[in-house]
Image (cartoon, rainbow, N blue to C red; front, side):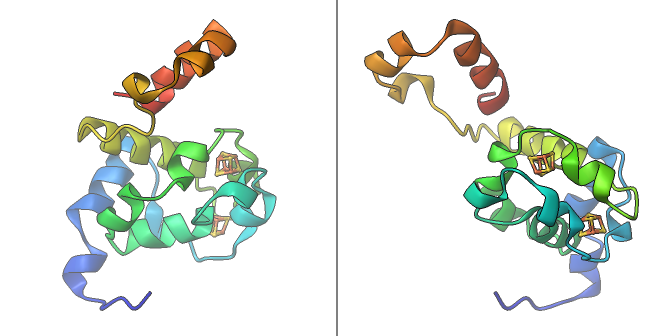
Length: 135
Ligand code: SF4
Ligand code: SF4
């Protein structure tokens, strides 16, 4: 992906919002990749955690809104304990999910789930899934 850098992009409102919601200084990330190397969900992600961090720094909100990574993040904190800069990446992922849900962008639509899946899945899994994936 080719990105045109500008001062405005590097100080975007989106980046400030994510920083405010997550309580993290996003500028600390220097792309060492340790978060991605230790992430147990990276095999299924379309963007690695360090790539998500870079997109946030660049203010590329649209690219993040369409990615699966923020939803697949299991909040396991493996990235957070590995980060040499002390960035709580799990909280950044949570902030990104919140921003999507506030725009009515759900990852799962209950009305489009098949009756068979609803009948087979444990109720606790459905409830916790809907809490995470729907607004
Ligand atoms: S908290 Fe999310 S991004 Fe971090 S290691 Fe776990 S699954 Fe990966
Ligand atoms: S471990 Fe921390 S500094 Fe390294 S890429 Fe991930 S968020 Fe950035």
